[in-house]
Length: 284
Image (cartoon, rainbow, N blue to C red; front, side, top):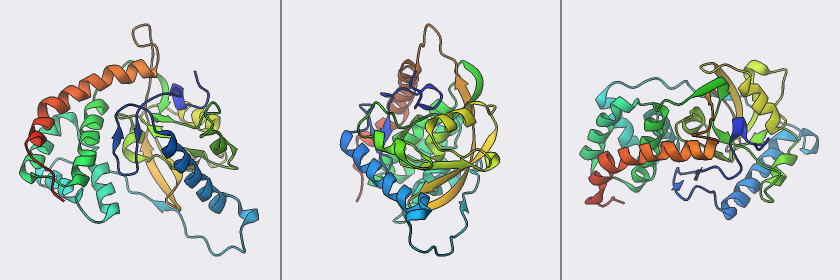
């Protein structure tokens, strides 16, 4: 098991997801994107995490605390959120995606109705719709568990030349990718730098191992406030941890676990959503 993978996420785990939420269906983040993400993360880290090398400091703005997403039960709200996925405002699109990923599987019919009423849909809606459906299906899909919290992210590995520089940062850990169905997929982004946990302020996150230990020692269902550098801002993100998967002979590792669950999500997509889009071109 890779020590640099949170709660057992292996080096070659899939999938990778871009900043606009477009899934790389082959399961691996491309090398060029990893290099770009690494360079960006290092640049941000150098700017925010190395005070001794910085020019005279200006007053630092307090961290932004993102609100805790609330469950949605109103069809009109779902319709509006789906419309917001086509907004020209990127922050509005992100907020709508996060909210829709909080739906329960039993509410996918309401989302399907919203899509049907919106045809033809915009490219930005199409780009994230399958990700939303996949996450909602898998978030409600039961699995065997073992004690400990779980985020469902892959962290930098010393075995990757592209990722190795990300292990040399003075502080913080870069999120390489997230797994659909787990809390990180909804609330974190690829390229986020986790620099701390507010409830564990005496234990800084300086390495992947620090993060692994902090998460696995927490109970599933516990909400931790992660301090994250995202797009050059320090934000605090409350995340309720999932239960750590318990692997066995039938499902020996996370790759097998993901592959088995992916079939369930793909079946729902192909049966309930893909036919809506098949004969309808996107707009824009």
